[in-house]
Image 1 (cartoon, helix red, strand yellow):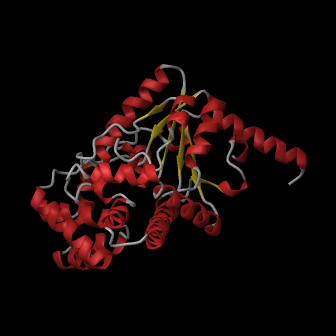
Image 2 (cartoon, rainbow, N blue to C red):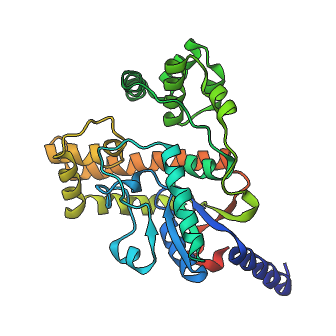
Image 3 (cartoon, helix red, strand yellow):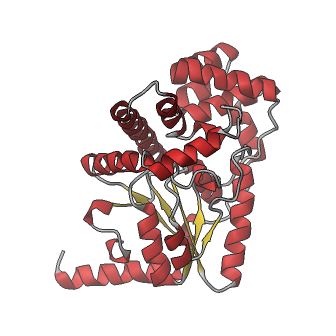
Length: 317
């Protein structure tokens, strides 16, 4: 592309950024989402709104890699650390809070910047959301126990056995498979049927937003993940997990299932040494990042891809 044409293209992208109703930044863990959000917020007079399910919890600042206190003071942040670890939270509940925050930011004449790694949140916001039925505790516990014991293949086998072959074939994420099994067992109807009859209109139309997925090279991301694992095992991270464990919460709660909690728990119990704990944390986080990348590739194919390894700032768009 000629220099003149490239300059015109960049100018057009910056104009779109300024005129967007909202900026949405998704990406795998450790890919630099928060850094890009900060730079864009400063460029666009923005307010950052959390779209990551683990960063909602007040007890998980270090384990979930929430923005630092200095970063939160630099730019207004919303929906970070707003829930106790004892709370189970749904996509629908997040969507209601996010819409309230978006409207508040727009009322201030500022730009909402939603950032996080929870693909379902972005999908609900831009494609509509089906409010699913309440699930009895015994059914939820049984489905999650199956997920823990047998993983994705066990969930798929059970869904197929109960007659929801569509979900078993279409879904690969363990959380979504577990949700499909819960809904089927609680209501007798497949998840897809509920989604079709209860789907709401999207709150943010895709053409009114700048939608970004960070897509770094695998080696670059893996190096950052290993660095994050080491940070989790510094004294502040260990103290955070120790304080969380002291609450004696159910291990089935989302906060207790966050990557880092079980690994640090075993380290504190003396059943794993530091080197092995770093390895376990690194592997678990890499696996999670891979699942996120698969989700974004399959569920959000029309979002703009940005390589953060080339620099995290507004000019990378």
